[in-house]
Amino acid sequence: MGRPRQNFTAEFKQDAVNYYYSSGKSIKAAAADLKVSTSGLNNWIQSAKANDGYVEHRGSGNYSTDAEKEIARLKKELRDSQDALEILKKAINILNKE
Image (cartoon, rainbow, N blue to C red; front, side, top):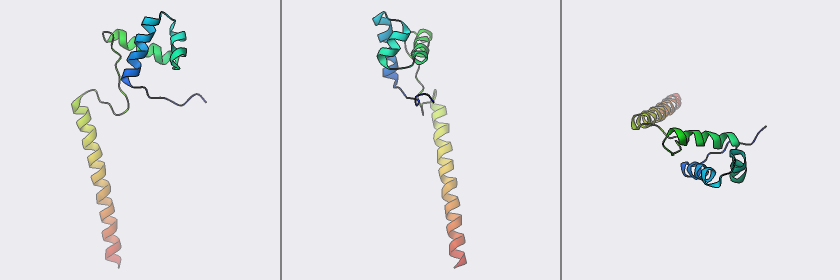
């Protein structure tokens, strides 16, 4: 199998794109210097081209809008409440059997 997937910060991605442009090297050579995949660096470069020179970053847990973030928080809160309710129901059943 290949290497495990790495998560890079937005700052690292931006620095990698800046390094590529300032070094004058090919994408393959710049990626080797930075120890990242050629396709990853190329994706970051394309993202920067499409966003006025800034790499768009959506790491794990990042949401594009505040509404999406709030929805995710509420879904987690609902799951936690449902889990707590199930535990309480089981505890009541155990106590009623005694």
